[in-house]
Image 1 (cartoon, rainbow, N blue to C red):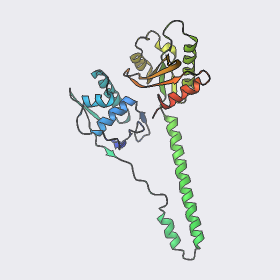
Image 2 (image 1 turned 180 degrees about the vertical axis):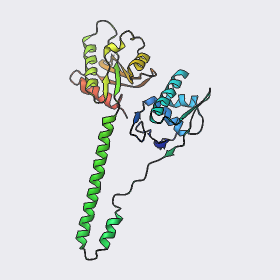
Image 3 (image 1 turned 30 degrees about the vertical axis):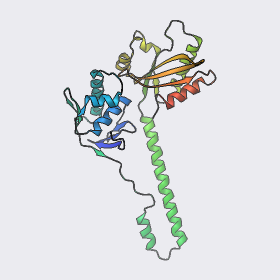
Image 4 (image 1 turned 90 degrees about the vertical axis):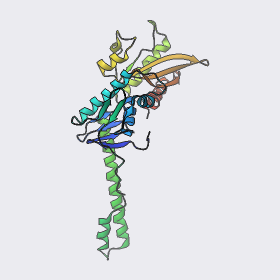
Length: 287
């Protein structure tokens, strides 16, 4: 697998596999979930060639038992999202019982940027004024460089703010930490802290507990279908080496496959701060 290339242009779309985003010229974008991101990595790496089902399973779900239906649904989701960005192009071909093939031609790599200190027009103007003092030439060059740097910084900040403003909201469901009818005080505290952290985090919509009503045994397909949930967080409190620890699992709502896991020591004085750190660095927002 070629991990050096992550930026591509294809059929009028810009594909950034590193960032996990696909855009069209109109500015519409699609944020990839981890499963779709890894599937596209394989398909694009093997563009024009057969990517076998086994290759896809090995790269996307290593050491996991996953049914063919999970792969089929994931490919179907990729097609659906790509069609929203470009309805005239066929992107993925199905080769029955063998695998899939990426069809459109790809252009890989970054566009080379023009060095900031290359200002031939200004230099020519200066050379045409032989009487100009050397100090004035240096001053104008410095001012021009500062103006260019300031303009680039402004454009970068504007682009970042625009991306944040249009970043799709993540729909997250939280499985109640307590399985029984009478939760312990610790379980209630952890569940409440998790919900408070998720409610306050930008870019996240936390689904109500009632969203899982009647589907507690297997909530994943229901939450994905009915509420467009992206992630489901499972949690439990365990005792390890005499200390209480919160174990967290991040589950892909579409496939029901746990993508990441983390644990945090239960410290009532720093509970929300510790949970925020784990969610930010190791689970939902990990990069």
